[in-house]
Length: 59
Image 1 (spheres, rainbow, N blue to C red):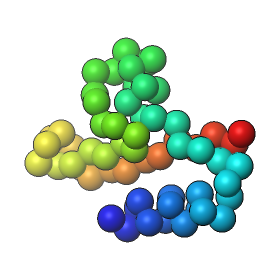
Image 2: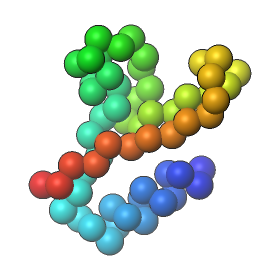
Image 3: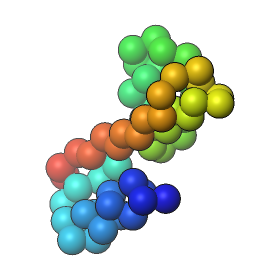
């Protein structure tokens, strides 16, 4: 997907950054939404607008 390509290109050029698992961050906030590594909300699955987010951390 377009969003993944943008993040992957950034990571390829900036190896000091890593992806923080979105599901783990949501769980820490007591949000029961297993999205995997990158957050994707889809209208037909989550009854909301489409949304994408990736949390990056500088190492």
